[in-house]
Image (cartoon, rainbow, N blue to C red):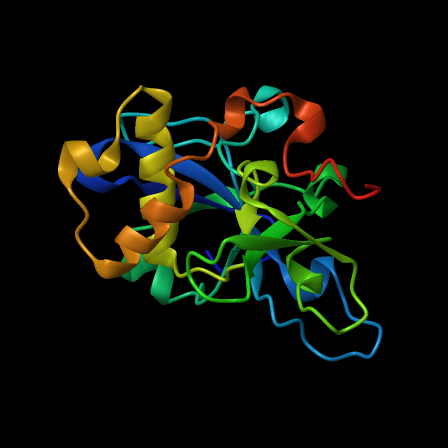
Length: 213
């Protein structure tokens, strides 16, 4: 089974906590550039709020299942790499209208970790100040529910899923298991104060509310 647009992965959570479902979307197919060049974003993963303890063998009906997190921009997924991290491909599902929706994203400003100010961009494909893209300077409290404009690796995907799953259960990944790598510390500090995504009102999921202020 080869990787293609609409592939469904099952991804193991850390610490044997279960398995998550993720839909792979090829950014160049989904969001082709007018100039014909490739996007700097390789792929988008839509991770569903459906964590199973036992390894699943079939793809569920996702029509009634919300997302666990904002769609994530992920790098390094190919037909070889996903197997090295024990991801498995179950099959494919058709691309649907919701798959084309990209969330607003944020970054520190200036772009130094833990800067006091933030900048919000229209989406991960258009997230560079000065390139004619829509952006707005803001503060941390107005952006807690948004993703950073990161292109994360597959291992960080597993950490983010595990952290969010534990948060839903009222647990803190740092307190429960510690943080194994420096990058986990960075991700933890960025998202430990974020609200639980699946519990947000649908009208603000992935959306910055203050564009017109």
